[in-house]
Image (cartoon, rainbow, N blue to C red; front, top):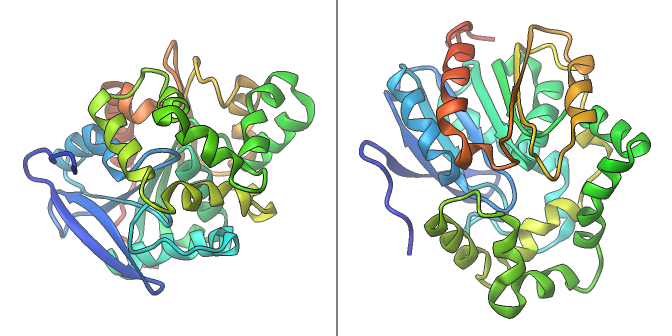
Length: 292
């Protein structure tokens, strides 16, 4: 079953790069676009409680079930999830929605990593960037090299990249007990069950884990000149303080770093009331309607 959407939301499909992506949207279709990118193991609807107030503030908000998450965009090869393909999807989403108009980009977790990379490679397309939880790729790499805490936190990535679908068997075994545990009780139970059901579809979990298996150095990204808001929860168990605090070193444009004390990795679901006002204030400083 698909969870019902809040009032005034709509479901959409975007045909991009030969695939069909599911999306949810709200707000005036002629207003400046705010495009939301989810992470693993979430879907577009993780953003619902943030999208609604942003739409009410005068923006068109769209969140997409990305490659591997949409049933119509689930190629089978690891190479199909290389960062170049993921970046091309984001560019395709924006072109399908607003053509050449600048837009605002928001990402969390893997969506945040992709948003950093997009901002580095497509700087002229963005009016602003907002990232939740995920540090800039180069700050993360340096933390992995030098910080034992981040090394410990990131050990799951090695497991996800192991061959022969070991991660899938572990996560979906025992009624998907370990997959449910990843949400750490921070997401609404109904949303967790919906996510588990979707990821239990044939090939779905493998497709989403292929993002990890196809990781390459392009994900590290370039310095970002786009006006950027970075929001990090001090209780994040996957992404530690070292990389979060160093992220500003890789932003050359206006930069705002906000720490949500006591909040975890799951900021879209856990802290929408904290995130939405920060995001709306950030969006209001910039004009997404400019043309490149």
